Image 1 (cartoon, one colour):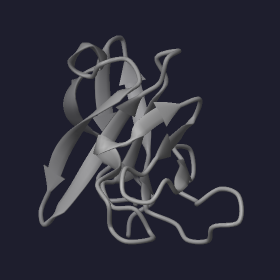
Image 2 (cartoon, helix red, strand yellow):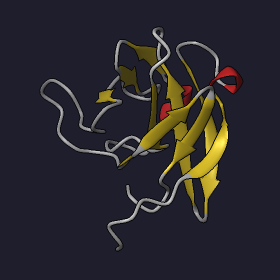
Image 3 (cartoon, helix red, strand yellow):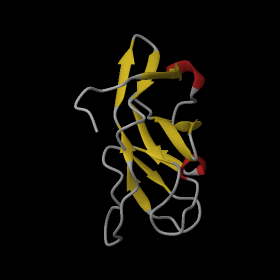
Image 4 (tube, rainbow, N blue to C red):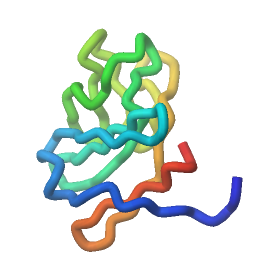
Length: 108
């Protein structure tokens, strides 16, 4: 893997509801792009580390998302399960340029 980041435009912050998510396909992987209440943008593989629930369908609160299947709380910053739960889903680097969202889809 190269040290150079490859940024891909995936949409606008306006495409994502506040405290919501939109999905982007990256080959066979689905990446969920989240928007927090204070307009921070994060990207995780759309798969909970517990039972592969779709995190994009979860509830966004603070800088976390709660999986809709079994209520695991996942950090949007790191992809790590919070509290007593253990596991991690890949997180992708995000860059904002104005309202445009770019992801480095090569670096989960």
